[in-house]
Image (cartoon, rainbow, N blue to C red):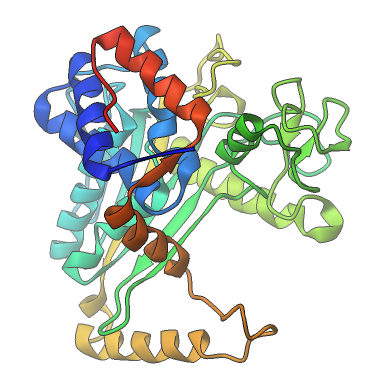
Length: 359
């Protein structure tokens, strides 16, 4: 385990994106979006994924200089074509469109097609907070998830994020995969040489397994809940809703046709749409009630839940976003820890582009 400052990793990732051919402004957006995951403690979606973006670019699946544009719109809705650009760049563009719509119409909804992996869902939803808006973000993803009762991998981890502003309290930020665990969590276990917990994975026969390589060996991730008895049908419903909102609505590839981010899978030979899909929402709080009034009540909501009596006094009750905020405060000052396999992977990327990873 090694620790790197945020600025060091920022400079490294920025240089890599520029070497890929991204304009400086896009490279800066991509770097900030990517590293937001590391700062918030979501190590599975941060700089550890940089080599994955490079791999897709080398295969011609990422356009470093996309012409991102709105292809259809109404006063409160839009469809954005990402032109196969980095999702780390396409998503912020689309979220901005949603917020601009909300400023005029009260709410804004944007569906995106022809994009790629967009980092952590929470980062995009949080962009709405500074405008006293509620933000929503979701995306479909590599088809690694078997629906309840199925052997086949038909869905992605398909995350959902909602960010809600408060007044004196920090914002509510719910950000979760619709699977028991994201694939990136498996990658972390693989780097550590550890088994997967119960309920995360099934083997190629559909039976539960603790083998962290189970998905690579033909198995699948399981929906949130793990199995039918523990509510996996609800995780399946959530994941399928994200797939439909993000891809069927936008014209992106959906279900098993979603282009994979992982290296052990190839894109489907019979695509039903264009690229990966996302969906964003922005709701102006004052379209429902005065913003100050709402935020005061959000403070009260947050305080009541956080101060509820815990089962164990050493583990206080948190609200969504607390843990990530603690990580961010710690890591911006003391650096971001990286596992040795991640460091080696980044150094290999650096050698490819002539960029040095500095401590």
